[in-house]
Length: 345
Length: 245
Image (cartoon, rainbow over all chains, first blue to last red; front, side):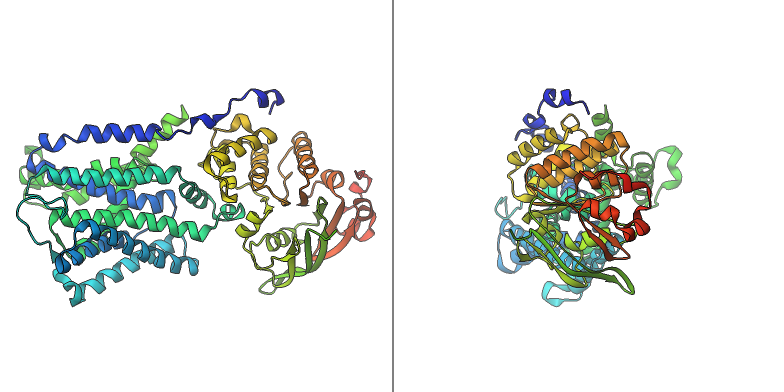
């Protein structure tokens, strides 16, 4: 460590700007996809909207498990609490889903903090923490499924209105407004992720993920920040749940709290890039259309895939193959691996 | 002058294992206390108890006349009693600058100030030209300095240094010793566990010797190295010729 270097190294502080590369990328991506619903057919638009929902769900998981290092296997709980909060308020009291969304975010955050506190109180970490989050989500599913107060297994149908209403988040089938609404919400979630990553909370979350004891030894109140990260993550998961319900106009315990939802939340960032801002978006672009692509193949397979006609489950197989390939060749996910290569150059 | 750190009858047991037993000492502001002893003597356990990593089984720790025995490590660190680790524990995915800035932020500095303070500290410890590299890429000597830099970002009044020279080759030790001396000259009280007797003799005002978790000797470096019990239990003959400062 040459003493002369000490005088000559320029300070890296000027690199910290508000409008950084991530913000520029966000503006470009949003601007590029705004006209999309005007160009897509109705079926394609619903795939595009599913990408938006997947991305929100993936971003939610990524905050808690990617940045925060707390592996969640129960993200369906946050999604479901958002979906059910807004549905109950809308169906029973006619309250706007926007207000339902705020309530859902709060409910999910409070639930997340309570479950998190219980887990940390009993020093659950790693696999045990993941299993606890799964168990709590399953518990919620069973409670909702057997509780007449929330329509048990029947769930909720969102009452249809005539015409369009941004206030009630409802538009005629095929309206581009659904996509734009989802895009607004996703933009908010991405913005929240960018702000989180550069915030003190985000930096503390990464420090805790890297080494909890070392983080504590430099004065970071570990428990408080872990719970804060869970609350942020849960709130974003709830937004995904609210939008899902408003788009599909239906929710039931399995769709809201089912284990499959939690698995989706994990797979999206794992494929895209865990602990990166853009990984969940990349993952959702790849995974969300998989059902539709496989359904199309199975409906009318090319000659060499004739044996697949009438079969089902191809999407699950492709999921599995994709995950195996990503884990084998891109262990940091697609975006994560690309980012790694670029920054190492 | 009242002591800045006061340890009274401190003990720690893990089940049937008595790691530290009835250890007492005071440290005056600005003093440097070296803690030595054979492996397994309880030095790191003593540090862990003092730094709030885990509570002692018996005894008390006072810091600035306040009983801090039940304080968490995070609370103690924010109050100015900071420890470093024997095995370096950087936040691997963060840059060197971020590693230090996050400590400054934990003390309460705003983001921009935290970065500026981190940059100043990196210049002081000679890590500024590594500032934008990820910390996991640092060599051992750099990681040792990073541990110190991170601790300094908390504006410590007391530093607990656990084998800060371990793993360094002799040529790398002197710059770190010089750095510790400059930290001491700024009024920081140092307590350090060390096996490198050259550093213990050069830095310490007083030395505490632990053996089997108990105090074997406590005094000035020259008193300690001349103590026959210390020579027998830990030093052997080879270091009795090392000059004290």
